[in-house]
Amino acid sequence: MTDGHVHDAVINSISGPVLRATMRMPFHINEAVKVGPQRLLGEVIRINGSESVIQVYEDTSGLKPGDPVNATGSPLAVKLGPGMLGNIFDGLLRPLKQQGRYVKPGIGDKTNGETYRFSPLVEEGDLITRGTLFGSVTRKHARLQRCMAPPDCDGRVVSIKPAGEYTDDETLCVLDCGDNEVRELSMSHYWPVRQPRPVLQRRPVKGPLFTGQRILDSIFPVGCGSRAAMPGGFGTGKTVLQETLAKWCDADVIIYVGCGERGNEMASVLHDFPSLEDPRTGRPLMERTVIIANTSNMPVAAREASIYTAVTVGEYFRDMGLRVALMADSTSRWAEALREISGRLGELPGEAGYPAYLSSRQADFYERAANVSTLSGKAGSLTIIGAVSPPSADFSEPVTTHTKRYVHCFWGLDAVRAQARFYPAIHPLQSYSRDVDALNHFWSQHGHPTWGRQRQKFLALLEEQARLERMARIIGKDALPPRQQHVLLCAELINEAFLRQSAFSEVDRYCSAERQIEMMQMISRFIRLSRNAIELDHSVESISALPVMRKLRRMGEDIGEDELDDFEDLRDELDEAFEQLTRSAKYEAERDEG
Ligand code: ADP
Image (cartoon, rainbow, N blue to C red; front, side, top):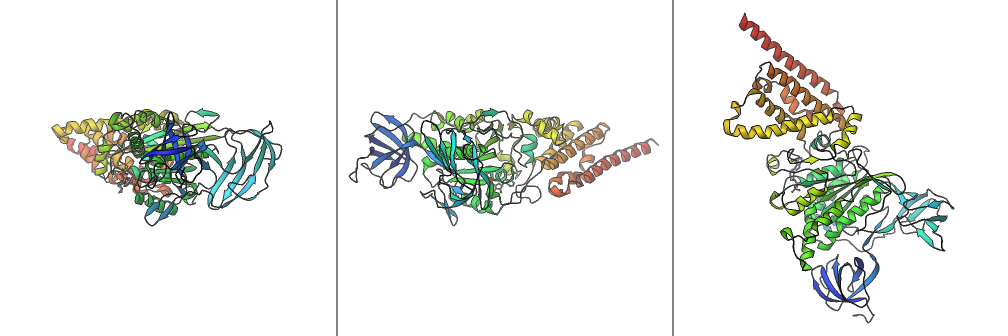
């Protein structure tokens, strides 16, 4: 009551981002509130009699007991509209400013007066139901977007604005919803971040989210609308892999959430992205990207919210009938935010100090990934890829184990591989994909009906390699019989020629489906030819000494996307090498006999 007005509540105590206030008017749980004279944004997270517990999404320094809290009457919501693509926001979707190498916290005002070109898709008298796309919006340097009726709206068009330039708040369409109720629609609308947006139907995964990374697409593929996690210790390549996916995957829209990263790391993402080109369209990648950054120097409660904000933005684009990919780096920092807030609330800590609801919160997040029929009947999808940074790379810690329960693809990043600078450091024996069966069709359509079998074969060889290497450590590699040495040779080739792929190589950072097939078949061919040669008593050394081996190992680097015909030459060379090997052996045998 500092200013003489009657306020809805008054602050009693403050502990970092969490404060307790005595209510004069009852708040709703999860209601957004404005706190203190600066009207900081907060959310009611618990109510005990006349006391409410509020988490504040902004810096609370300067607040004091006795400061007012006012209700807003609605849950924590974000404004979804055409200004999002190509921009960077904080955890509550407020535009961020980048200053030098650092990212500055968001500033309150979301409307900056920018106008967008609107064209109507409906006429007066038309019926608009939930999710109807009633107009299209074009904006300089951004892809075409749609104006969507919010999911809770039904009515007949009374008036619609003609094509022209409008701000995202201006009323474009007026609806008669019956019972004398009129509703005004603009390009943007608000949606509560913790509430999943409705869809007509969730559908099974059908096609892949193609990433251009061989170990993912060919070995552990992720379906469009599916969910994947990449756990890995410090320096195992999570950030590079997330960025690589954001750059090269074939989604229409990318939502990149930097959650709890250092400000300067995020600034490097911001620096990199605008200069990158979309390999498929030649347009700047930023045009299809929304970056949400909640760096470690920003309020911890906003970090907790940033994940929900990002999913909500993803669902919004999905509802336009687009394929959306959401990358979250890292969900562990998000779980730490939950832990910190829970600690301040005095809740009973569960495993490793995390709150008991950690698992259900993670489920809420990953469950929002889906392949759907949208309310307007279009096909859309939201794929979620979360990075996990387990302390000491221990995959048995709570965040990783719970994540495993909710994802379909698990890409375990291995410290030993990373130390050997083998990237991506995804460990083939600690990773899995449950989307494989759904994606056979994709590879068949690309002319590779045996993909599933070849993939199995590769994995079996890698597993056998691990077993044999353990044995070789005891008895020595040379003591292994030729067939087992052959397994080691093939597994080494799979690793070096196929799984290894540098994110920084001009030629190899992206690998099309066609090139992946060529490479997979080339290695399968080598396995077959060399097995035959071993059966004909050729030594493994003579095979690994063949000059063509070097070319096989380097084919990812040497044969680019525009040179796919060169695979034919390599195939001929491979056949020729084995023919010669057999011929010379025959000749030697005949000579010896003679
Ligand atoms: P994390 O986020 O897990 O701590 P980073 O993504 O920052 O690890 O990766 C650490 C370093 O490893 C990078 O700076 C880069 O040099 C190297 N690296 C990681 N992934 C790759 C990759 N796919 N290709 C080439 N180098 C990589």
